[in-house]
Picture (tube, rainbow, N blue to C red):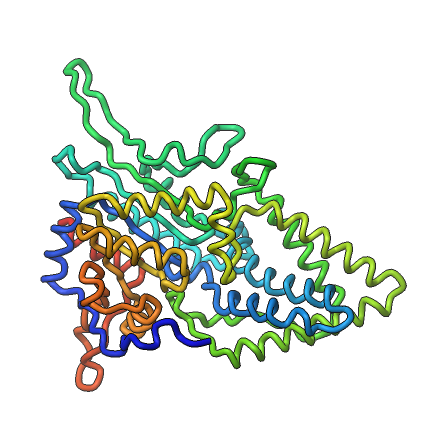
Length: 435
């Protein structure tokens, strides 16, 4: 597939470095604009993995569906189930470990991520806490493409009043009606009121705790359906017991810019195909094995349909705009970027999502008062992001790619080494800019 940005030379794009001049400019931006953050998968490392090549594997599966043979439907469903298992275990089920005191979770990674998010949320809110002007609200909007509960937990633990698209106490439903609600404290007897810093939280691709419930979305913190889906994946694996399992790599980079060649994806797909064929063959050796296998796949489909998330595939844009709730989430992002004197700070996001990428680049061209600051994990990350954006400073003068400060310890050939911009580093930058 030809690169849509093949004519754009992004190899020589020089991102801006975090230094005193940048901090001074950032301070002015935070003081004078409506502040928004966009968080991607890289922010939730190390507790959660990035999606890796799951989107490409799904595309490969659809492209090769017709060539899967006479048992193609079952083989197709088995391959799809394994791709979904990778996604589910890495991005959805891990939330059970993240928000509960489970012994099977990686405590160190989870605690590290929780502490980083809480610190980041505290510092992000602090950027608006001391505002005196009534023209700019004491409110920060967080958009995230992640399914995890990291932001939900962090905002709650930090005690930040949050419009999080939830309504109701005992039977909670997903709604956007609370978006933008501001919180005020009334003075006793003096008739004045002061605004309390607050946040909006928008889950662009859905959330692991959202459930499809007829014509509405509800909130479920019991995790029963997640346990049910995990049990079904485990049951499916028993049909192929004894064969080597294909597992996703655990060595993903700290930002969702992992690149996988088409050859690597094709090889991974062939492994999945052989695994599925072996599973099907073993099932057929039993009298009712094939029937039981199909029944288990049907159960899995039914349980999976209860999850209210946009699945990782290249057609996610179509599935997004066709769903009223997800369309509304994107509309919130679009509306925020259209406001005058608005800033968007992007972190842990690769811009591989076409619908979000096009929305932001379109807004950058249409709104000259919009400022987009992309905080890149590393210098290499900035190159990948520039390529995904088709970026050039001339075309997008209000978009800025930023890398971490130069390492003070680096000498000689390493003198150009930059400190990574992960969540703790970004929290520190916000702390310095707000001082």
